[in-house]
Amino acid sequence: MLNSKNRGRPLAAAAVVSVLTVTAAACGSGSTGDGTAATTSSSASAPAEKVTITVQTFGSGENFGYDSAVEEWNKSHPNIQIKYDNLAGNFESEYLPQVNQWLEAGSGAGDIIGIDESGMGQMAARPQHFVDLAQYGLDSRKADFPEWKWNTGVNKDGKLFALGTDVGGMAMCYRSDLFKKAGLPTEREEVAKLWPDWDSYLKVGQQLKAKLPKTSFVDGPVTIFNTLMVQEAGKAGNLTYFDKEQNLVVESNPAVKTAFDFTKKLSEAGLSAKLAAWTDEWAAGQKNGTFATMACPSWMLGVISGNAGEENAGKWDVAAVPGGAGNWGGSWLAVPAQSKHPKEAAEVLNYLTGKEGQLHAFKEAGGVPSTLAGQKDPVVADAVNDYFSKAPSGKIFAESTQSVSPIFFGEKHTQVRAAVEQVLLGADQGSVKWGEAWAKFVAEGQMAAG
Image (cartoon, rainbow, N blue to C red):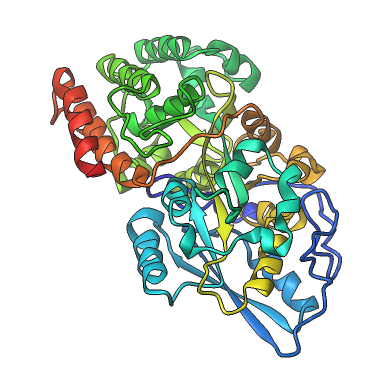
């Protein structure tokens, strides 16, 4: 799922997503994404004594959405029980520092830990902290996942240390009521045709601003920047802030500069509400119609519906993102080397990242499955989001991830991203001059990289 910098998990799917009824996982099935048993299937012989496997995750709201999956497992596995512990709402400022401390100390971490996309580079660079999941047969799961999702779970030594949970497929959320007031099309298919590319998106913003001068077109600089940078990274060696030798490439990577330049253009055109993501003001803007569009990874739907409230149900809708594809966020599960029960932990991880575990999570929290079988299941493929004007959210988000390239995340990706995003926000709000912003952006990135 995870995450953006401060991203919270979606609200319960019962409030935001209408799905078909899913058949509960058969007791002890331990199925992989395509329904076949892995080597570590949950039907394997139970341990002689009762074992408790602690699963640690992050996120607000319904976090990873594992409550129903855990309940299902615990009913049929009396000797391998799952204890689900959501440690913190914020991945980067709360959860990650604590988990890093435990990993370095060799104790304190759960038997399974969730890792957001932004932390995968750091974890992949530290293979000593994690179990090689191939020891327990999970390397047989490769065909279950898109190539980029699988490859991100392989560490620098070429070992499989994590399997994917959800994906952060990209779309564009928009206020259809504001589009109507501006004389623009409101149906999602017609809206998507307005912006096949980002230059077209900017022109639509100018049209809306001309009709509704008190309404901004976008929330702020960060969501747009990250969306475009990930798309452009696929054209630039699949890199963002670091190359695969861990060298900082902020200044030389065209993906970063292209995203920066477009964000600057959008801001200078007066289309930004100048809001810092994850603040109270940002949340209020979603509720009050301060801005008309916002780049939306799949997990963002729950954030918006929670912030905007029931009084705005049906005013928001979802259309394809300019450029047509992309992924921002999503998470993985890994087994720390310090686990005293790595075999049983691998069994639980196999279940939670398999098709049935991911469908439980989708129903509960709206996270789009990363398994190909999960994405194609009617529970996801036929899902509509009542809050977002009955948008076919499962189809929209799953399709947006199919052509995504495997983006490389450096060991200090999180630190650099936090630093450069502050420069973007400062330039958008006026504390940094746009003419000086690129030099400062590069300098702050270099400082954060150390």
